[in-house]
Length: 191
Length: 420
Image (cartoon, rainbow over all chains, first blue to last red; front, side):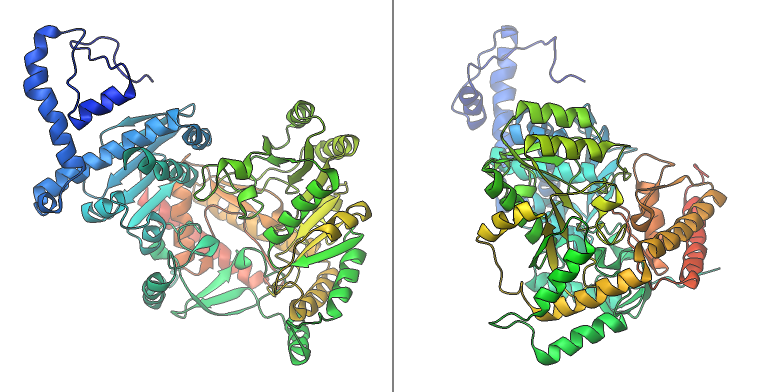
């Protein structure tokens, strides 16, 4: 499994993590080193898209009152967290400790009757696929979008939710356990 | 047969009430999260009463209990002899400024019973004494590092958790070294790489971790480890909290033909009256005396009185042999029921603490489903942990268990026509 692309139409290099974060924050305009002919796309589409990212990821209460927006925002958060879990498991020193205890297989992280992601583990390397799992070796399923959102926003505790049945776990629990340990570290990076 | 299927309305009511005032409602290994209640709806959440091999939940459902409170129930809940001794002591004193001489009597009994014991030190929980053992090893050797065996569980203090656990910081575990079970070459390598720095090697007598088949020691493994520890001045600590008294009343190290320097007991000592005990060889006595390590309830007399009665009764019954016989009947019946229905049920570990796993799939999903059907029909088992037996389990209980197991296998098979 490999992350990233070897061929691309546009290449946006960043000299530092701070510069990348600046693009997300809207303080840095990216200059492509390849695909300059697509500059219009960058300026008219890509940069505004990063602004929208902020709107969905740091949603206001007002925006969240719209059920359609709520679902889209929560879905985006699910995917972001699932991808973050994989990156932290692969890169963060303590995340790697958790990852080395996870056996191979697919972990389904999903919202009942809603979106889902697969965290695929192979030789302790993790990759997130943004689609529901047809089969899995372990599962962590949230009762509904509202509960998932409350969990993602840190308003409720996952362990308590398992007791109430609002979070269903099954299969190789040791996989779920260790993914949860990495999940605990997501807030360090994405808060 | 068609068993009654449990409902848990009152359990849920109590749990909802609990979540308002207790973090997670029921936290820890007896709760639905760590206890792996999969699904939660199949399991009782609160008990009401217990007797022998049974407990009844708050909805009045009776369970044959193959977890025995995760070990403390070794003679049967409310054993008349143990409880009589405890209640007799209650009339005299329990937790008092001047500790009762019952502590001395229990210490003498531990020294007489446990093969490697020249002394005994008492506390409340298993982790109290695993921590005491580690501290004593560090005090005695003036070394920092500790070797753990992967898959370990020695309690919940930060030193014995893992670096990725909430509330644990890297400094808590910075001196921990890890080896794989049964890999003596790896032990040798780790010892060589940390020459003169290792205070202790701590391990359970065999690998009885969760979520995985349990593994007995390879031939000669413990003898080689014992020799290496002696040569290198490493204190050998056996954590017998889980297996203690169930394999051998003289200690699980004795069962496997070697001697620990220190050995930790808890669960089975007093049949549920709470006491833990660290025993060890004479050369460690001074180091233990030097520790600043105590607790308000550690010298309570009632658990000591209960422990004396319990240990004497375990010896009288030849408990390890009794439990092994019962366990082989139980696991034999479960395997037969599995095979009759097309399931591959694996049984591992020592019989008295058997671990189960349906191996038809590699995800444990089928196994969790089967356990769920067992629990709903009044046979309390878990999908992630070894099981425990107690002396009061009868042949009738075992027959009923087998019948329910067969019914549960049929239900699961029917739910999965793609597999069966």
